[in-house]
Image (cartoon, rainbow, N blue to C red):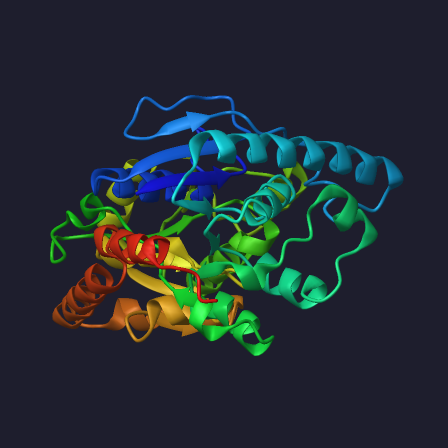
Length: 385
């Protein structure tokens, strides 16, 4: 099968979840014998099993002007969108793929989706955030003038959609998206994620992995640590992730200093995922105190695969991903502190049994090889008429 994949950005140096997920899926499809060509706005070519063409134009300021609130932003987007529409139409005529696979529907890739539909191609869109449900509700009937001019008002009902969780699928289903065109396929983890001795001795340590930002709730983890310390339970916390706000990081440092947590907290910055998994394999607990509605919650799945006990907030898809194999609490310092105490008070054999069940569940539910096969079946399926 000839697959033309379209992704807003690809980079071998990027550690972002979307890029890593794309790389895993494209590589998996290529290993199954499918031909993969990727159109992107990135500038790197992959020395791998699939080809990446940095063909698309991007607008680096669209993240800051997310809602296109100024005339200048609209004009800039209109120009980029038209260029991308025309470029993709040319590539479709030249390459003649069996299916077009859109993996990140946003400002850069909306017009390529229109191009694929106008060309009559079979199209599958991979939905991995809440934008798709919002887009469907806003634009399912009448596109705006800007959308008509820029060819960015594609009819999603003419596509097939892969949702990465029920959290993402529900707004589409509830909004009337045809059920026969929608399938939930969870994100997958490579086999080397599971390479750990679940019952190995672990450090009495907490781990946070993710962006060091307000919406990921790093401050909640620190506040929980302070509550535990005041109650006589001292546990080290390692924070892994890139900081995106100097102001927020300064607030965290002020809190650490005020609560005298300096000797308990280690900030390790961003790491490659194999290094993250090594840390997870040695930690007792992984904290995911997100304040946002997570579309999936890959860190929680990775924690279970690596044998750490996940304690997650009750936001978005996190309860769906963890199910009964971790602790789900409100994203408050007290909620996380109480859950940490509960885990640490469990007898060792009970914690080991919990780890084994979580590891087995994760291997069955989130193994990349199985999920790529499900994606391939979706790509091979004909769109219902």
